Length: 208
Image (cartoon, rainbow, N blue to C red; front, side, top):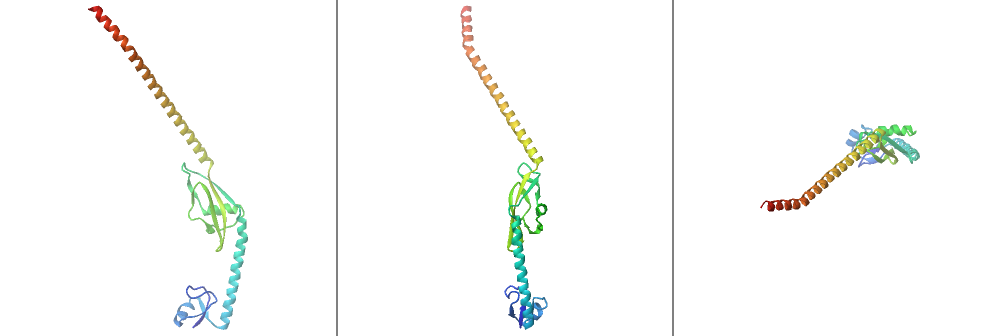
């Protein structure tokens, strides 16, 4: 039987195509599912008209997306987050947060169109794609930085580390000074020993 497709069907055809199929396949599956119609002159014209309208809508949506993509050019989003010593965030930057930040800049984008494989969990700069259309994407730059509390904590940790290094250096100097003093004392004892030995020998001779 001859049918005209109302939807794209893999291995069979695209919308508007007139195809020949087995009666059972057409009557029991394609027509009941709304995937095809009997290919009469009127249904062919109606379906082809629908197809032209659909293609026009697709092209209009694509042009609109391309125009809107220009609005994202040069857009930068900054997030101040609490950060650990290793640069890992306490929390993460999500597509919902990016959506909110874009809206603050007057850019209305559903978070489902923000291409983020997983939430951002490290300090850094990221290029994030926005899927405006199946064939159109825009990109924004997302900068994730430590917040003031994290910067202050890092500074305190650095100062504490510097103080520890200084204390260790002072302790090492003290140990070295003690070692040098001990060495000098030992040398003095060794230098005095011959004189004491000679005095002892003289006293022994007088006694004889």
